[in-house]
Image 1 (cartoon, rainbow, N blue to C red):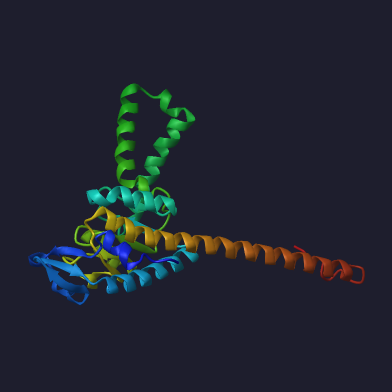
Image 2 (cartoon, rainbow, N blue to C red):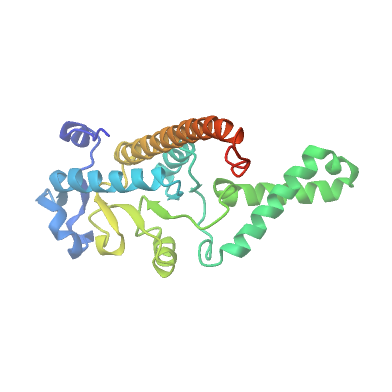
Length: 265
């Protein structure tokens, strides 16, 4: 797992915080200095905490768990969607619906409704209803897909959240805390890092900064998924070898006794 170099972090502007007057005092341990009224983030802390977050995200992927990526701010939406899709993870880049986690059963009903409309279009049912109904259903599907499309394949609550701006996504943070769902997040100098389990001190406004941090996390997840795939394949090969070995033994035994007839199942 390769982390970005300090030069990479500098070039992406990860170290630029907010104006001093906008700071959150709880970010003090992660601020290196003040320059022209702007707080500068300590990249040593960023590097270390990014490493911790990436390792934790990799372990989640190895165990087959889902990380929900959340970013509704304009400069982060496309980046988050692309990176989440790259590793097959769910994402929310439009409006966060209140209760998306705490009332997940209702959200799942809306997703099911969206998929039913898609199915109607695919199997020809859509063409057999009148024009007005088709128009209404199409509008409903578009609205649902915009908000819920990124979590359409999320069958159960995610095992963790990755959030780009915890100040903006405070509702998501609150719901995750209520359900004891671990949170990863980029925390800028106007944020409270104590609100999340894996804070990563970083500029959460610049697209290059968001891209670099997010890519590091998704690369770690990709590694975890690959390792999980390899482990499953190794287990399959081992089971097959065990089965063949057991089967061979049973063939020798069957000539003497039928007590182990089920041994090669």
